[in-house]
Image (cartoon, rainbow, N blue to C red; front, side):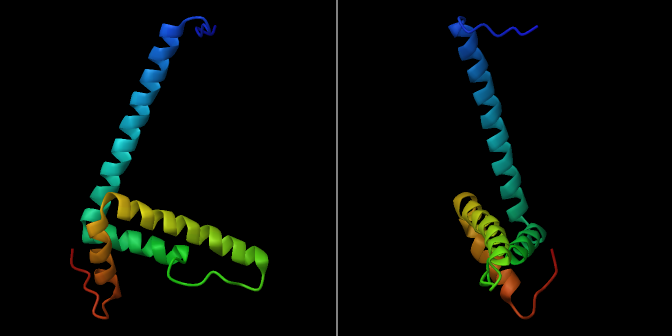
Length: 109
């Protein structure tokens, strides 16, 4: 049996407030998790690998339009990851680039 009553405005507001609190907690947790990942050299290496696999640092052009669309989809995911880095921990981006573009990459953590 469904307890939803369309005439119970207070009940609806409580449901909406509870749902909003849960969304906020989930967003805050995701932000904290991502910052944690980007704080370590190991985490930045993982993210760098994702960016490389997404094709952010190369052209997505291909004569086959379906392949190019697929490449652009991957690239779009990578660009959203870069946007997230710049929004949440911009200082980590330059550190990550420096760590992963040196010829003498050091794997020390």
